[in-house]
Amino acid sequence: MVEPPHRKNVSNIVTPKLPPFRDKIPKNISFSHERFAHDHLLSACCARRDHLRIFPRARSKAGASANRLLQHPDVKATIAWIRACMASEFPAQDKSAYPRSAEEIGDIFRRLNYWRRFQL
Image (cartoon, rainbow, N blue to C red; front, side):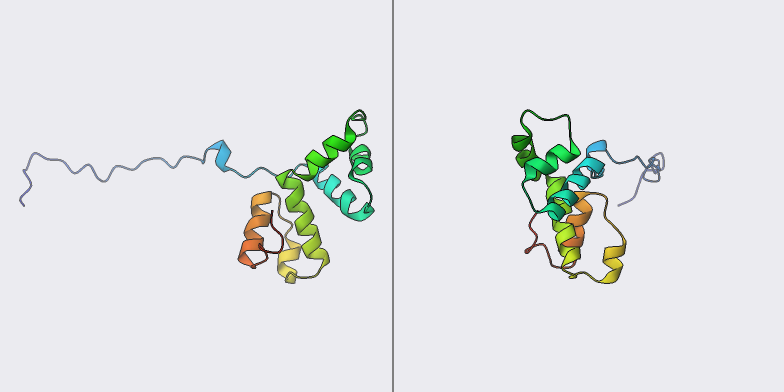
């Protein structure tokens, strides 16, 4: 097919590279959630006491808040990561880089085929 001479080639337009949307950027695990997960694994007692240790002003319904916090995906991922590291099931290079989000922990588990044992 022969192109007409007056037609311009518009396929070489360069579009600017835009940053990803805010909901696509993984959120870091908050310090209080990470600390709650560490305390919960180290103390091996009730979650209510661990919740009161991290959040001392939340006294009225600390037991319910602790149970809700244990279901939070960031806390679940941190607990799974700590258990896997304590069980020495990771190569050394994967333990040294501490993941900052639940998505990173899930990616490492899937890459190393641990996702079935530590379901998030």
